[in-house]
Image 1 (spheres, rainbow, N blue to C red):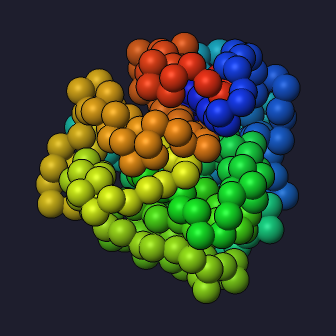
Image 2: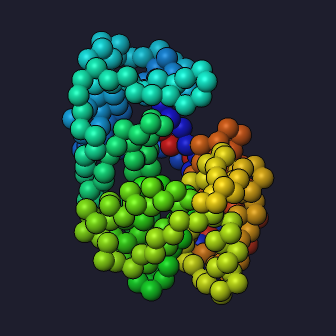
Length: 291
């Protein structure tokens, strides 16, 4: 089962900081099941999923336990197999659509079986999407939220649905186009959204020079990534600088931050401490692991 680390910080000037730890895999089962997605089983470093009408198998490096429903693993449409040389490929047993849409919350989300094994959603973020929508509803419509490493844009849809403005940034034009398709299909493309294909650090420094102000931040940084012009991002080196830039863009008073990552060594406590020293010990933290 895929794991992630989550810290969400909501800050007001009158609040005192409180720390709570939530184990999302235990307390929020909906994080791994929706009407169009279901995690059926996991084990032996793989996971068995249903996405729309299709059952598939994908790698899951953290699933070191035995599968609990071995009889369900045989009749699948396909499996994504890693290569010893890097990368991987799909091994299909039955025909599937090249792309199709599913419903997540009230949004229409395009699904594709990509050469990298991705689908276009990380279903473990479901509770975060709900929280982002709620937090965005507490902002003014002209207040802008910055969604970094924004992937297929479901968090962007949640901000727009909540009524705030959003800047959606990803270094991949293909992923930004995918997110725009999701916004169009969900009836949210007419809302206040800026679509940016850019390197994260370059963009943040330019926005600071322009005097921009953002009220909320959403980010799920990769362990390693490349910017739109080949710039290298390494989380252990660049995340502290990135967080400093975000604080500067919000006058050290963001209304909320949702920070997740999948990188070994970045535990919930480590992420909490990265934020803790940057927001003047005000607001509240909610930290834990996603399924």
